[in-house]
Length: 178
Image 1 (cartoon, rainbow, N blue to C red):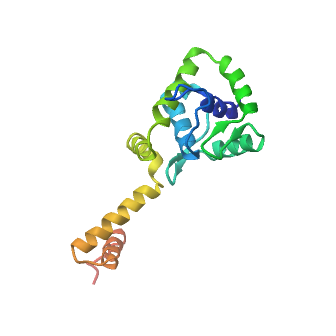
Image 2 (cartoon, one colour):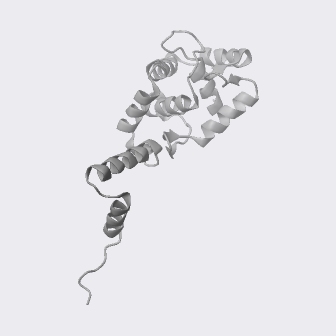
Image 3 (cartoon, one colour):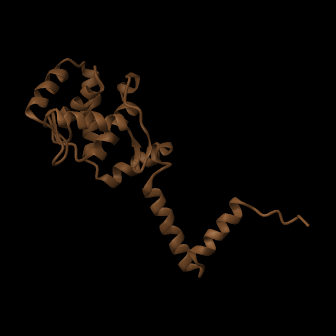
């Protein structure tokens, strides 16, 4: 099975609405749901997409490119969420019917569980469970910047003072030199 087939299968799977081809809200959701499919289900053993830390947690460039190819080929529509076109639906239905029950259950469980979460809850779950994929997160950096801004205001210091303190910690001056 090709990796792009997994994209079609995940889109085809029933989510909380119990309808085939339930829309996946966004590319971010697709990235996170596919990541979780390979981390938390029987698909762990499959040759899957490679994910790296990125701005909003785990990201696969290959998945992004395959999704774009499916959109360009007319199998997927990404205008209002991510859904299968009629042609893509036929392909996905045939793929679905060829899957065993364990794989169908895994796909549906991931989609049902995570598709209905709001984006903040989805990211909170990922950030809590898969910390190594959040090292480049803009959300964490934004929180740090907010924290240090409020710390500076509360303690009557400037951001430059904090920056200077961090630089001294990172590059200590040897004060024992004569």
